[in-house]
Amino acid sequence: MRGIVRGLAISALATIIAGAVVWLIAKATGSVAIGRAFDHVEAPWIIAVAAAELLSYPAYTIAYRSLAQVHGQAPMTRAIAARIVVAGFGPFALLGGFGIDKQALAVVHEDERGARVKVLALGALEWAVLAPVGCACAIVLLLQDSPIMGSLLWPWAIAVPVGFAAAGWASSPDRAQRLSRFRGRTIAPLAETLDGVAALRTLVLHPVEYREAWVGTMFYWAFDIFSFYAAARMFGIRLNFGETVIAYASGYAVTRRSLPLGGAGLTELLMTYSLYWVGSSLAPALAAVLVYRLFNFVLVGVPAVIAQRQLERIFDAELNPLPSVPAAISPRRIRGRFRSRAGR
Image (tube, rainbow, N blue to C red; front, top):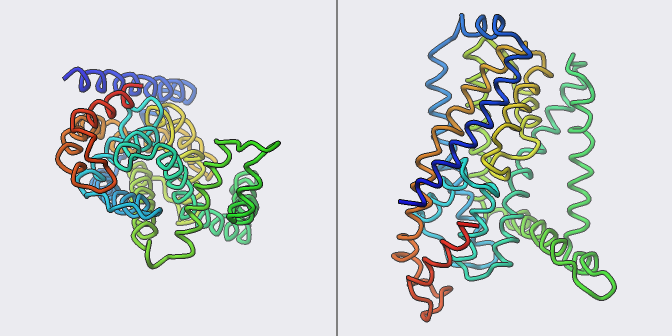
């Protein structure tokens, strides 16, 4: 019970931070303009916002389970994967959803370094799917002489191919080992980062074996982007596909699952102004982001707290039979290890 209260308290803090940022943007925009944005709301679009957001979580769970097996680990049960994913999207995670992933994967596979590598690989997988789409949209918009400012489009058009080339070059096994050593000593954070990119390299080289990782991530982004688009349509913002992707991806310069407190504050700021940068007025942009975040941030708070608490009981029921967990590790010890990590 204490853990649930603590989680709800931190979620409330995240909500306050997000609300403060929204208030500051609204103050700069003007109350009259904000009021006008709500005068003509296309209410049916809210159903699409909610439905797309709900579908994004199962899609992410499918990708998560597949990635968790990248080093030959035993398959994670759907019950565990679903709860880890939901907990990771919650606004109570002080170190972000990836922090919860690291805690949970370390317990599941009894390998803390491997857990850190997989968390890095998860982040790389997210961008390996989204970034090329953003790059392609930016190039098309540049060729069409779009009125969107070039300072928003050119980084997508140039940095993504350069980044992928650099990652491919640095992640080859022999080169990664050399790059992560300095004066005969291994630089652990760099070595783990390169191993995370190398795990993505494994997904690329074996697309059929890890097809669920690719398909799940693709559908996660598709559903979440459509939820964002539907929220924009609620307030009369009409964007084409390329503009929607650029606005969304620029607003998520760092994905919400990797940010502390579910990206509270920063995401509201970036997504509002990314809509403004692609041509929307600031008032409806803020209103759209407020509705979008209401579904992927506030409403997931309570289920995420409950999911985190349920993980302890699921570990007792599901993990002991797995060969990756030594028989000497009792349910009480597993539960204690998860609590100690989750409380940090």
